Length: 472
Image (tube, rainbow, N blue to C red; front, side, top):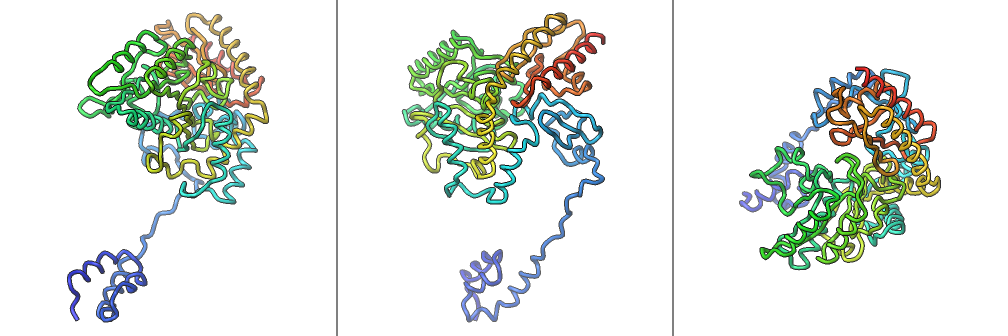
């Protein structure tokens, strides 16, 4: 008996399945005729021999990076092997570095925190990941804590700050679409930073980040930007959008309560009050990016609490998991019910492991009164930096920020021709890890558990670096 064309095509499609699966579909009259075909198919599917990972005993890490890792970062010449609290240890020295970077405002509980380590270990021994097709107790509990301690009604979980901001952007567009707006516009601020994904990068109103990622010179349509803290410019652009007769409408105003990457620039209460008023008047959403400022870093749980306003949407990541990847988009009112099944999703978002970490950070903030520690250490750090600014006025300028999100300006055109990056490099030589914020600000973002002694140690090391810089 010869196979007809339909039967032959069906067999070809099924060849990627097991022999057992294929034979279940083959008519008995054809099984004997095709047995050699099945044997040949199995023979050609021998598993490849893979190269196992190295055991790490003789690795040249720098060479491995140069050979195998895409160069998306300009890395400092440090290879970290371990950490404890606010200290990091490298592979080349027994001395520690005092870590006032915290994985860029991420390791809220420092390194190897015993409660976080225990929680992650216990969760791994139970279940670390399932799909959002099922109920996840840890996710429900973390969402409840976030809503109980904010203006939010509901939370959506993802894996990072950029993803949380993408979710906020999509929610704002969907909300505007339901109102009949066909050309939704989101207003952001110049010198902002909202992430590296394409829409979040468009919202990031810094042209240097857009270079090479445009289509015919344009980023994602539907975004405009105005100067941060400039009320008149904000009012002007909103009036232009809302008075347009070309289908445009205001979907959202999207801001950071404190600009981090833009140079540690706190928002002004009157500016945010006006943003709130404009959104209410237009039926638009006020979206606040709390990725760096949130989870206690400013001395309040949320940065916008320093501004006496409530957003419709705010985002979180970084410190939310204490270094375990997790992001969240929180919303209230209509924004909380804008997404429906199928509108947005995340494979890993809110999985048991990440949420167990988030719950531990939440519990520790509450049980150890970390908000008070942030306020106390902030006052200590700010006072110390202001004294150094007065002592070295030819190099250092304004001290600004909230809580333990603090920056000090390195003066443009200083006689030492030193940049913020140069100062950070000198601090590293003294055993203090810091990170620039923009071109001329040195950023201090230690773990929220930092002690009085560690703040004093950091100030001492920072002054030593300044002395070296001013003698150069």
